[in-house]
Length: 617
Ligand code: ATP
Image (cartoon, rainbow, N blue to C red; front, side, top):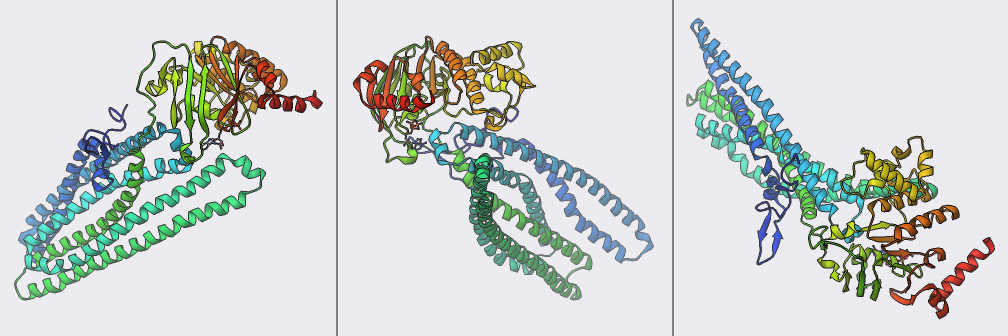
């Protein structure tokens, strides 16, 4: 990794000193705040340190201007021919100071910006790393548009805050501090008079900061609500188009944008008001300096050159303060966004994607022991009730039953997308909760009801599940071709001008439903899984293709434990055992012949299918 040991370095709340406070035996993430936000910059300490050094030199050169100009005015004010040498010397010195200052300003700009880029890249990767391992239940509850928005927009706000803004903040802060020291050194009396306005500015600044932080958080939230609408519309554009709902969606989106606009307007109001206060305060300070300083000069208690220096310093200080007010606003904005980012970073999945036992070999015995389950998103509805089921190694178990009975839920439980609410699942006698989930998932292949492909080539899609497969490698290509042939996909793949290299579009939109299914079957074939999970995998095929794919699946199922969800009679007839689900329990189980003889739910399902198929046949 170019960005460090792990992308989460200094980012997540659980690094050694980056954010976790040790509670009594329990680790609690550190609260999101200014300290934690600036903690993101810790891995870039060296770069930022270099930038800081360059900034100090360039600031010093800026701060040297008033005193040198003051001196030069002193020399000029003497209006004497003998002062030419002194004037030349002061000019040359100032030229050198400016050259060094300019160079350092460039170095400062580069170092702070590049550090910012690294910080935000690291933050985005860490956030992505955290999100991608979250529980499936997390994705049931959080919408894609919202998560995308946090990855893109919230992190971008932090990028500016902890780097460019911080560099500006430090630069102008240093200018203010040095300026203050210098004016006190020049005339403490005039300084005290000038600074009388400070308490008011500070009091307003505190309120302004709190306001900006609160509004910014709400603003980012409103923005992500708008992103949710946009993401949903774009990913379902065919449905939107076929119902001619473009104008309704536009209204929904404009309402969401109007919310963020209203918050943005409030922020703009506060920003403008605070900016005006800072400018008026600064100009008042200049006026006070001219008036009171002028009085001191007229009274002979101050030199004109001192007043000139003082005035220029005051202008530098007030200009820096104005810049600082911008910095302050954006820091508070970023703080609002950071709360949302840290909340995601602190999220811990209850089912880790890795860690646990990896069995040295696997027979493929799967047992569900009194498994009950309710989806976290709907915790009060029990979807599975005390389900007992044994799938012996190498056997084919078919799940059927009415829609919504819980068949796909069983597949999800076996994949360990969710843990049972009660009861347990065992693989070769070992509880699933003790197995390494990554290892276990690699033993399986799932061909889902609606196969989802990635927006890459057919070759990449088929090779997706094979760890370390190199699509450029001839052996991989040959294996993919073979898998496509077995899955009866090779004819249509070859018919595309680019063959295996044909792109399939987002989620496979450029393929037909049946083509997608066959690619998904080829993908499963290539993994050579021990356990095969088929969720009505042949539903979108025509009769001839279904026959060929069924053959392929039959070959694939040999010596593998297979769980197949099927509504179609043809798929279930040959299964070793059929479990008929109804209302979250297994109402009937047995072979096709046994269940037909029983004359129960299965029998009526079979009857209905035969009646439906009758007239067409
Ligand atoms: P079908 O044959 O129509 O695919 P199924 O038997 O596979 O149906 P499941 O998908 O297991 O049914 O769904 C069982 C129940 O769980 C349904 O009532 C469904 O509404 C609910 N359900 C499914 N997925 C979720 C989810 N992610 N969050 C909350 N409830 C869910």
